[in-house]
Length: 163
Image (tube, rainbow, N blue to C red; front, side):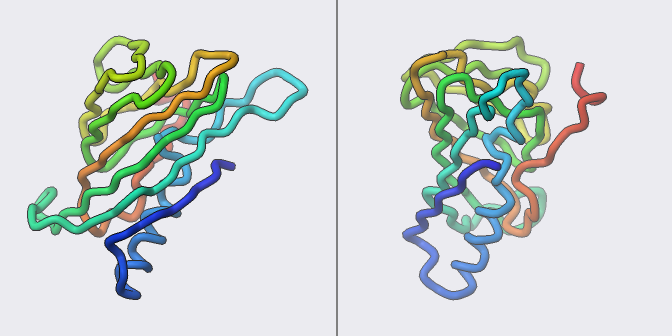
């Protein structure tokens, strides 16, 4: 299981807290990054940690519905990786620390370093998200714009859908 930590300055009402909690629980696999790949070792697989930094309503519509912007910090320990998934809205990402192997949509796999940015279109197959290092952690800041009523911010993908 992925550890989720929430921190939401903007949700002071009971409704806002409930919505933030629903978003938090729907991001278990975020950043990202789905459930952790099974690895053939005696040690448990490293697990990504997703921290919800904020989730705020926007005045802009997403797909004809009221919008929301959710900001996450994704921490991947050495060797941590996620399973393929999709997101209901576009993601804008920034690598804060370490290296991040990333592949989404039709784009080739990339190895990003601290200071690099990436874009992931809404509903694109996010096939690769991993920390290639055996010794250093990776931290990624991810901002997703999505419909406020989105129930799942991470949509798992069955293996047969992945190329």
